Length: 164
Image (cartoon, rainbow, N blue to C red; front, side, top):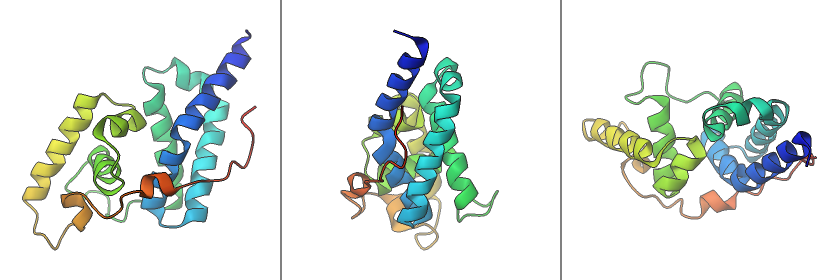
């Protein structure tokens, strides 16, 4: 098998595994299906050109997660001004994926390209920070399970370009 074939195959598998979850996250950040879909497709286009670098990185999923976050930030930065959030970006991502989109913590960790124990630590740190905030400051989904059940699977972005 050629190196190019293996790279294409691994990217196709990665795409299949993460595409819908990336779309759910993008939609949760942007709140517009069209823009969310475009961000995900743009991220996979960037990954298509940088897949060798992603595979050579220490954590390809973390590399890919950062590509996705960059594409989303170009479209819609966090609604919380820089330096005003009680959380680092990674904690916000864990809260959004785990609390709003209801991904299990191990899936959240896999999407972000971090170890399960790191996701647990981020969640615990966010919970400590939340406990010190007045209830009216934080959205209800930051504090616990939400009615967003099923949203993570609701995204079905159309593939705008084949992976080959």
